[in-house]
Length: 198
Image 1 (tube, rainbow, N blue to C red):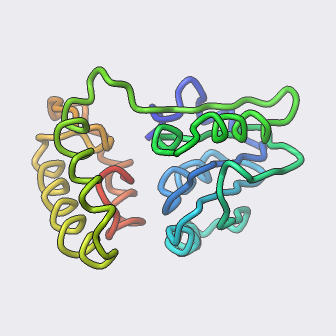
Image 2 (cartoon, helix red, strand yellow):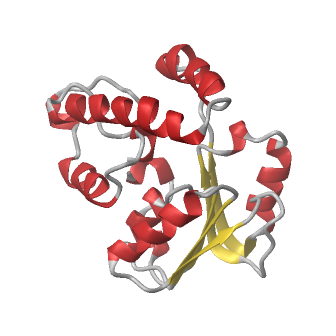
């Protein structure tokens, strides 16, 4: 999980106020809480905030809050660290999203925005993007139970058997590169999540 946030390291978060724009179900925030920040705040537009609240309650930490709001319009006095992972490139106006990342970073703070690159994402471009275009038009329950759940189960089986690294990138790596502690924590906290959230 930590490689999603590079060049930020766990020590960078200690004692800091942290904001994640586009937090989804809070899979990254749950790990960031282990880095001992002063506080964490997550913002997401969708109903994933309900899952985020549920998932963060499971961590046992109390120094967090979740807001249901468009990340592009979220405004604050500023955070020490602001990050947005895998969200900006999905927005209708990515520039507004990036402006929010920068605008919510206080002077002297740090921000991190991670977007999918074209290179190294053939599986996403060939399989996931077309599936996402179709699924986004389907009723939520069909997408979750008929498509996402079976795909997540298949992904978990591949990870358990050492065929895919549990990083949500679809990279095929040897067994030695797997990170079982991060993966197990992800499964424990987010059993109904899609593979991209682990």
